[in-house]
Amino acid sequence: MTAAVSAGILACSFGTGAAAEETVSSAEAAVSEAEEAGSEDATDADLEAANKVAALIDAIYVQSRTDETDAQIEAARAGWDALTDVQKELVAGEEADPDYFGRDTGDASLDDPLNEDGIGEKELLVVSFGTSYNDSRTEDIGGIEKALQEAFPDWSVRRAFTSQIILNHIQARDGEKIDNVDQALERAVANGVRHLVVQPTHLMQGAEYDELCASIEAYRSQFESVYIAKPLLGDVGADASEVNEDKKTVAEAAVKAAADANSYDSPEAMMEDGIALVLLGHGTSHTAAVTYSQMQAQVGELNYPNVFIGTVEGKPDGTGCEDVIDRIAKSGYRKVFIRPLMVVAGDHANNDMADPADPESWISRFSASGNFDSVVTQIAGLGRLPEVQAVYVAHAGEYIEEAAEEAAAPEADAAASENAVPEDGTYLVDVTTDSSMFHVNEADEGKGILTVEGGSMSVYFRLPSTSVQNLFAGTAEEAQQEGAQLLEPQTDTVTYDDGISEEVNGFTVPVPALDEEFPVALIGTKGKWYDHMISVSNPEHYEG
Image (cartoon, one colour):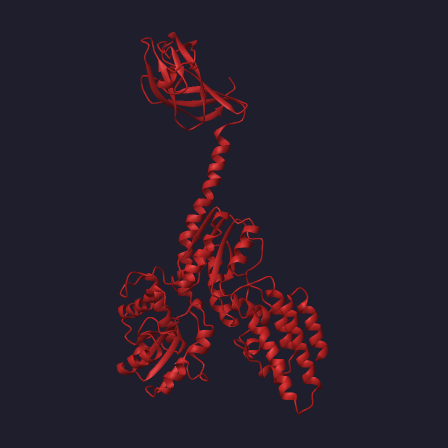
């Protein structure tokens, strides 16, 4: 075991800070002492070794990521691997316990961290709080991500978690690296992403959603467009009675899933059998707490009197465990199902809701109340339900469409810009004026000759007579300023369909852009200037 510890220390302390090296070295020494000690002091040595590793775990049980985080994670993993089974059971710290590394939460290899490069110009970043429960991460978060990628195949779906504590846990235990929000955004910038749509998997517009919006805002200038879609339950709403289609869809899906999980044909059949269903959320002190009250109003509108909304935190008022027990007992229900009103069935669902060994869990407290004949928990997040995934697809789709239009706009502008000045040459064009008193000669059928040379454009067109003496490329007021460069006429002969010919004036006028009106002033035989607008369009090669 000493050799294993030494190898782990060498691998993990390289590049760490002095504090990390000292902690790891202390853990190695403690383990060595445990090996060498006799039976008389083995327990103390075991405890010391376990405490050293607990300190390593506590060091990475933090919400901030630093330059030393990766090395600290490796050190914690190596320290744990070096412990004996007895010592692992003794691990206890401020946050550390044997379950940090030892709990089996499923196969992490089935999860796709979605942190690869090669993103392209359009990214759909799916942001979750995160979970260290591998099966839930794969089914709940992964289910949403897969649904989004299938719905929007032209966009690259990537993942970010907001909880660094969870990210460190997953990396230490399973070796899986998932981006935090800053890492994901830096990856997007480095990959040349131009258009970013962020889809939070949060339940509501609460504190975590607000923090995410602030994080995204700091990067907004590095993308051409950035959109943040709504979380699962949509807009919060003004008061407890305000519901919406998102809340209705989620309520219906959650109740149906509860019935299906217990082999009931329908929610009504479950209700007829005297089942009370508790949908358990996290709870919050944020103003968005009203969302839970709205969900209670929503199940009422759906005629589910047997469905009760609760929260782990007991916020808003009336959603705490004792309050919900009392409400259900007074309603006369003797059988209870408890299911998460959470996108992911993670720590809260597995421990706060469903752990029978924890006297403070909801299943323990419901059972201990003596009010019910049976209490059953269902550990399944909302994120795995197809109806819920469809809500996220709809939310993202609103902004995918806007982003796509914005993405297309510069391309259209670029194409227009490329076509605004044709290559050098001569073109037959339409010349349109704003007045029947100032127009192209009938014999020319509204056409003029556009000449492009060195990127500059000018058009020659003939007027109906010789009455226009001069033109000016600009306004009448500008034409009368000192130094104004007037356009001189060219006398030309036109022949009409009836064979009659006459002399008319033609003018060569500079063209600033195709398909856009520009001002031209004219002066006639009476010596008065007039303002007009003309446009030149539809160039076709002209051989003369």
